[in-house]
Image (cartoon, rainbow over all chains, first blue to last red; front, top):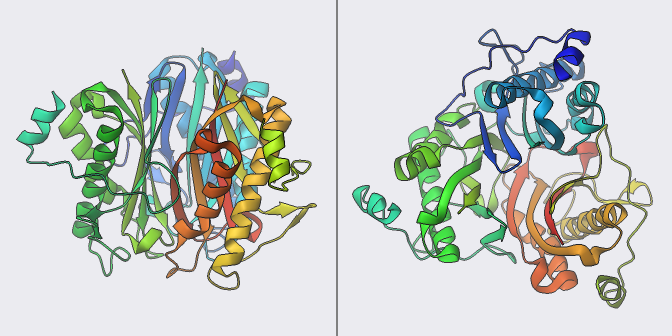
Length: 151
Length: 151
Length: 151
């Protein structure tokens, strides 16, 4: 039961943030769900703005990545009703707002990957790409999208 | 009928531009079509080069994004015969050639998203990611790829 | 037989490199395999670091792109046993560690696309997106991920 797992991890899924544009948070085709790029928004405000490693440290960027996943799961739950329907996280794309010489994108996105495995166990083990972006929407420090397999 | 909708919107799908490399414009697996990254090409020439917000304004970048979608639909139609076979636009990935401090990628890619909804209605509502790229092929201002569900 | 084709091309698939983070190299859902972003690693060391066109030339970046594909195929083979199960390469996403004024990403990623067609023939013809990244994991010159259809 994913809800119990979230409780044990002290994670409360928020009301999912509204898309910052004219699109939808999740689409589903057959057993595949596509979750739109999520940014570190909490209570309607972006918590982490600007690039890594400055003004945002690696540690702060990791918190941002974790929050992106929490928002992605909130979006997914709002769409499918229960996260118990997730049978596999297939792909995570992690974009880090990076200075041209920042090269630790994997460490940033590991915070997202680790959280998915903490929550979903084996089903949370995903393929991944981590990229340094020149800039991101609303100056977010991280943006993450996901492809998920549903039962 | 998507053709009538395109006519009503005064959109003429061009002869699809040739890929700028050794790949194909569209692949299909089951009901899923993957459309290659499209750039703002018209009559064989790139209409929008360089970064946003300078030399390209937000407004010009939006025109570029719209043209990417028109080219993507031209590619898709050439492959599948009729756009009436599109049952859902699943995912749009929008890359904006961005100065390090440009953060309005969502507004740029909204022009693409809005056009898809104008053309396809509910079927055009997609998940999305918008990213600031350090640079793009042939100095294009925008590049957009799509994943589409077919009947 | 893909193994014979690889031999004819003098390509030896290496022991696949370990992910630079807490994720898995390949996930599979139905007939679709998602291969994680691969970087130019050989014998445990990154062969191409830094941006294009300097310190890495276009030619060197092409070698890096080719090596990304070899590593991606090594990962895929380790997961599915035989590359003969590949029925179509559906999508290649190529990220090039780019100076803000570098615009020849398609030429870089063509080295990857060409190799896929040399190896898989018609089945290797894929859709593609090529992007200039502000920076990449471990300062890699290129990162490539793939979506592949399996029998």
